[in-house]
Image (tube, rainbow, N blue to C red; front, side, top):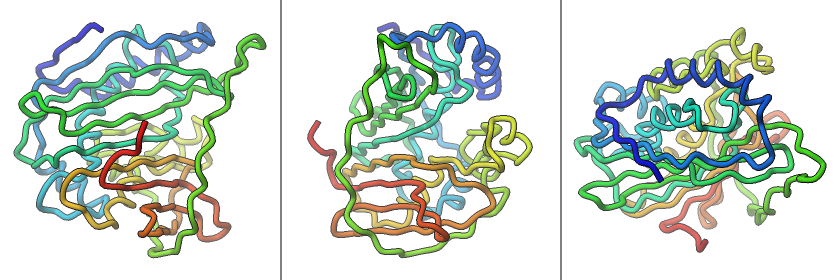
Length: 291
């Protein structure tokens, strides 16, 4: 695998623009056997900007002091992920990619003063009944030691050829019943506020007009905000931690969601209080489940 080391985080808007411009061409050339690029992007030292961290913890509900939130290294790695997806070797169109799930393993907590090495690479592509799924891996290291890692799956929806129909997603164990613990009203500008704090200013999250251009009736909350907001409600075990989530349905803004949890099983949900529609399901534990 080729490694490209960067001295500073890549700018997000140029990467998003390149990815957007290349998307129509990639969509026309999309193949069932789309291969993952053999490239790893590395940022030698990721610096936490205090003002951005403060805004992030405020928007997500994490404590304003202490170690970094378990989801924050994902924010540090996001510019690299966008750069990787905008690269000409990336086979899938960036526009229309749907974040379907994420799994995070925190081996050691990071502090705001730490300057971890962040690396992002494509862990693989796989056929999906609705198209092609790509998995991006993000890793954080201190002094060469792996302290944090995640795997994020993104789905590119397209019609597959008849001779390669694509396997359905692996069945998941049903979650045990959960009890509602909180109800959160979400303002229309949540996507803009979280986008400013995280750097993810995807147009679908900003305004109703920009979201409608991509098929949504209103702006959509960031999936990573919904995940982080749920985790912020849970006690921090103070050491190694595992968290995963599946993004089931978009959260339209403005709106209201219910946070439900069953602490003895380590599971949680985010759902619509009107009809019970599930937006997100997740699990937490002190260690990752067996592979």
